[in-house]
Length: 90
Image (cartoon, rainbow, N blue to C red; front, side, top):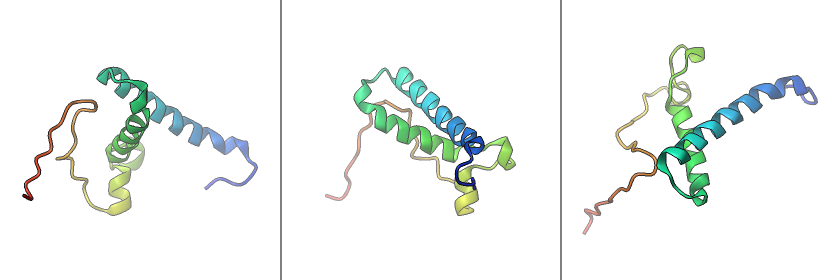
């Protein structure tokens, strides 16, 4: 928790934001999709960051530390790929 009016603590938030933006740019470049999908790419970058383990957290993901359960990765797909949804409730 940062103290008010102490710009020294802003570096942590700035670095986290830069990391998210770098992941977003990589996702957009890899998928070769228009800029109109930028918000979706940011959401995906944040999701991937929350699901990825880090060495600073003893190789545990932020999601695991928050929920104390392992995340389900079965529904993850390559960003920008086409996907078909089968509606079986007919």
